[in-house]
Amino acid sequence: MRASARTDNKLRKQDKGERDTLIGAMIVALLLAAVPASAGTRVALVIGNSAYQNAPFLPNPANDAADLSASLGRLGFDVKH
Image (cartoon, rainbow, N blue to C red; front, side, top):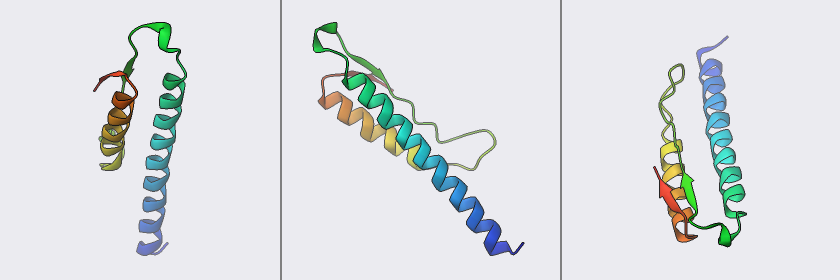
């Protein structure tokens, strides 16, 4: 296998991991947003893990978590980082 093909495979895996993290965060946000307002204080725990033990550093999960935290904060959630 050529070096460029190995690099392409690594990039595809990294892109998939970042996409999966973003999709998971969106699902959590949608589920949390569906909670009725009468339920009292709305709390959201947002985790953006960029440092997996067996994978290269991923810059986007931390950025995605910050964006999601800001959005949930605007929706009235007490966001915990």
